[in-house]
Amino acid sequence: MVVGVIAAALGLVAPGATGTAHACSCAQLELDDALAMSDAAFVGTLVEVRRPEVMLSSMDESRFVFEVETVYKGEVRERQSIVTASDGASCGLELAAGTRAIVFGTIDVYGITPDAGEYGANLCNGTAAFAGVPASFGTGTAPLPGSSTIGADDGWASRLVRGVWYVAVVALGVGLAVVIARRVRRSRSAPPAA
Image (cartoon, rainbow, N blue to C red; front, side, top):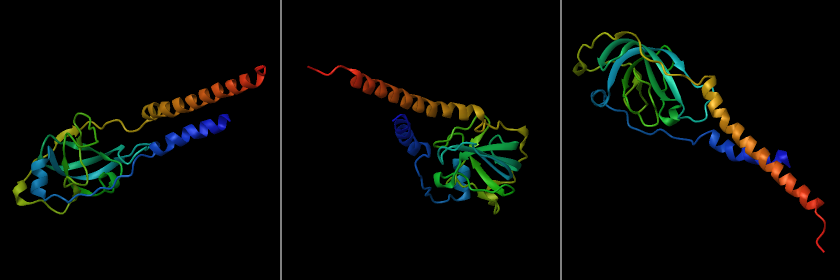
């Protein structure tokens, strides 16, 4: 009975643990429009992708770290972190390590929380593999020295916090099973009504 209650409790949690499926649908922006709408724009090479160790949703944040060569807008470091959803289905960036890209970053992206010094980006804001920049961008400038903040990835602390919810649900299930078992035992040991 206890196993049944725990399985039922986990069954209620499991569908939410995988997250809701999303489908990214948007028209790619013209580069001049992307530049106008962004807080930062640069050309760089993707050198590192930090994915969460435990991904509960395609909206979980990944960090794409770029070695920046030319900046067209914003305060961009030589090594710049871009926060994005972890999956293209939720409009997360779909670039492979080693890809040279034009990146448009914003401070505020729906569902994404960049740390100070980071920018957010997605498939819909113009970020893509590099194919040149229009003359209207100008010559660009060198990036600021050093690295931007690279926010915490999904390390042990995040897993622990998320794990607390599973432990709480299992504890609730076990507690409920114990209460039910005690009530059943009491009802069986109670003297029959006259």
